Every structure is written in C-alpha cells, then in structure tokens.
Length: 411
Length: 219
Image (cartoon, rainbow over all chains, first blue to last red; front, side, top):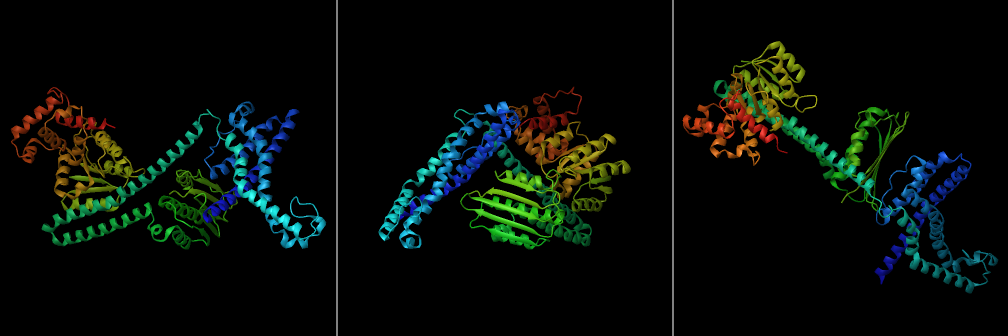
C-alpha cells in the first residue's frame, strides 16, 4: 500500500511537471500562432507573403521545443527535415502541414491543460487548508478558486476543505491522463506522417556515426603515430646502440661501455615517451580522482584565475569523461593563448534525469575565436559530435568567448 | 662506402651514424627531412642512401618519394629504406621500377648489426635486400587462387630467400641443401610463375615482384 501511494505521488508529480512543461511550449505555440496570424493578415494585402517562410520557421521552433520535451519524456519524436526556403514547397511540405494543424491545438488545449496543471494543485491545497485560515478572509469574499459563495462558519470552511480533497484526489486520479491528453496532439502530429521516409533522420545518424568513426580513426591515427614515430624509434635506437656496443666490446671495451650508457638512456626516453602516449589516451588522473578531481587539477594548473563549478552526482562513461576533460583542457589552453582574458569560468554539471553532461567554459577576453582558423576548435566540435553531443561556440569580436557543450553520459 | 642518412628522429639518426662509423664506413651527411636529404645527395654524391619511410611534414611516405626522386637525379644510387612496419604498397612502389640497388628493411633489423651490414653491402653492390618479415608476410597473405599456390613449401622457402636478395650459394647454405638442388627449385619456380628464359627483366626480381603484386591486389 505504501509503495503504491509512493508511486501514485511520484506519477502525479511527474504529470504536473509535464503539464507545466507543456504550458511553456504552449505559450511558445501561442506566440507562433499570433505571428502566423499577423503574417496571414498582411499576406491578404500581399505585403506579408515574403514573411511566410519566417513564420513557418517560428512554428518549427515551437514544434521542435515540443518535440524535445516529448522526447525527454516518452519515445523519441524525431525532428522534421528543414523547412524549404521557397513558399510553395514550404506550404506543401507534409511536416509543415502537420505542424500547422498541431499549432492551434497546442495553443488552445495544451495551454488550457497547462494552466489547469499549474492552478489546480495550488487551488486544491488552498481549499484543503482553508479551515485553518478562513477567519483571515472576509466571509463575503468566498473561498479559494471558484468558491465564491459566502463562508459563514467553520462548517462551510470544512465543506470547502472537502472540495479541496476531492480536487487533489481527482488530480491523483486524472493527472497522468491530462498530461497524456496535452501531449497527444504532438505525439500524433509532430512525428513524421505515416509513410514518410525517414531518410533525413537516417542521413543524420549516418553522418554522426561517420563522424564517430572519423573521430575514432583520427584518435587511433594519433596514437599509432606517436607509438611509431616516438616510442618505436626510441626502441630501435636502443637496439642499434646495443648492436653497436656488442660489436665494439671486442675492439674497444671503453667505447662499448659508452654505447651501453647511451642505449640505457635511450631506453629511459622510450619509457617516458610511452608514458606520454598512454596519458594522451586516457589521462590516469581521471581514473584516480574522477572527472571532478581531474578538472580541479586542470584549473589549478591554469595560468589564468579560474572559477570552477562542478556538480557531478555520478560517473560518466570513461570515454565521455576523457572527452570532457580534453575539451576543458583545450578551451583553457585557447583562453590562455589567444583570448587575453583575465578570468575564466568553467562549469560542468550532470543532469541526472536526462543523463547528459553540460560543460561551459567562458572567458572575458577579446573574442573572435574562429573555428575555421585551423585552431583546435574544429577538432573539439568533431569529438563532441561523435558522441551525438552539442557544441556551441559564441565569440563575437570584442568578446566574451563562451563554449557550451552537451554530451550524453553514456552507460 | 659513402653514405647519406635521412631519418627525422634525432636519436636514431645519431645512433645509425655512430654504428656505421664504428664499422669504418663513411657517413658523409645526415638529414632530418626530404629536402635536406636531396640536397645532401646532390652535394655529396654518395654510394648508398639510408632513408626512413616516414618523414616530415605528413609522416606518411615522404621517404619513399624522396628516395625515388634521389634515384631519378642520381641514377645508380643504392637506397636502403627503413620502415617502422610492413607496408606492402611501399615495398611494391619502391620495387616497381626494378629492384636493383634497393633494399627494404624493418627498422628493428638494424640492431642485428651483421644482418644490417650485409644487407647494406648487398644493396651497395647492386643487389636487393627485402626484409625477411616483409617477404614472410607477403607469402602468408598470398591469394588462394594465385600462381604462388602451386609452389611446394620448399620452393616457397627458396623464393622467400631470393626475395631477401640472397644468391644461390647463400640459399643453399641456409636450407642445408646442395646448390644444384637450389638451382632445380628455382627453375621450377620460374616455370610455375610462367617466367620464360627469354624474359627481358631479371627473372629473380620478376619472381619477387610477382609476389608483391599478387599480395597487393588483395583487399
């Protein structure tokens, strides 16, 4: 029984959260709808016609928000192909048409349910507790919510309280259904129409998979190169020196001694090389101290004053942690080298609900960082996209520079 | 013997020079990049060049390209290429225009000083030296339907030693057989690979190339 109650409460709180989340996208939908209506009105006179694609993109923005919301909660709602630029194809686009049907539904039903989800529990609680504070309210004012009749005495107040109990009970019973009802238009209309080919989504996935393979291949190439050109060369040098020393022993023992000495030093260098290579693959500090500790160390070693804010309630997959570490290290190096900043702020937060890691590194420098400038930025973006993550860099001339990254935590 | 070394790793470059000088060989110049190597060859006109496959700027096949260019500028230059690992395409590119005065060795072979020196002198004297590992891998990977499949194990051994650049006497000594037997094996190899005595090119080299081409054609 207790477990059942716990589950009911959790489900109801979740439902309320969904309803309120739906409210936010419904407000966006209202804004997009207004935008669309204005453009439509202008188009009747001809002036608004060039604005139609923009209005459709505004609708798309609202729809994408709703898609994101629904994907976080239930089965993923895949994004639609980009809105065509020209008006004719844009209006004929099946995804756009379905969004245009969805928009008024969400702007009305979704909005109403969202408001209900926000006010119903509050009113219910107010009513439930009304007997405790009904004396503070003049009798002719009535009670909370829709209770507008006169409240004469405690009996009336208790009746209101019972009404509140019924409201909260109803919420427990129907909250989930309301949330589902609110999501229903989106789940029906924002998914690709039956029969639509998912080629765009397939292309997206293929590209990100290819990028992952690319990033992997690049990483392997980097490791292979440092092994071949560094460590292996050192070891070959060791064998060359040992071979020379062996032959020298018979002719000139003193020279042989010297060669053995050199061989030993070369072997030590090989060990150093190897350590460097291994560190590059997966910084041991991550293993020893976790991502938070590793970032501490990174910030402590930074030439600029750093503000570090880390909130990591759980560990991520090793490769994700290594990527996060690499990104922060790279961003700090860039800030020190290029930005002329006086301070840097690093934030690393894990969202346990969505299992995503959010990184942000911002400085107060001169900005103007350019991804095409052959800097490490392109490599950073590739590494993030390889994980199906998001990489955002804003760096207007004059600064400041901010890098925002989102990575899925992996298993 | 006058030698130019092209190797971008400083320690290895110095080690090689040290080793060769200790053997009384004349290392006239060393270079750490392809351009420097070509200049050194032009200036010193060496007998042999020892070249690392991977050199700056891209660390892929700059050494092979530079070696080819040096041989174009100075015909008759003997070149011994050192490679970190077995790479078929390098071996075939290198040997495609004839295998005279060419060698392709794995780097670690240098530590076996006697073998390294004998390969070096073989190449300088106009012969060929292909690393036993390279030949071994090529043999192991030959296509199932290839002409090489028709060779007996003994003939494969002989061909493998031929590919390394050994002469009949040396092959006989390695395999503990008479020179006559080796001779018979070689005739049989030529026959199975359809190399007639009228072929213009050196049949020994062609036989080796047949291997390399055969194995390179695989995925």
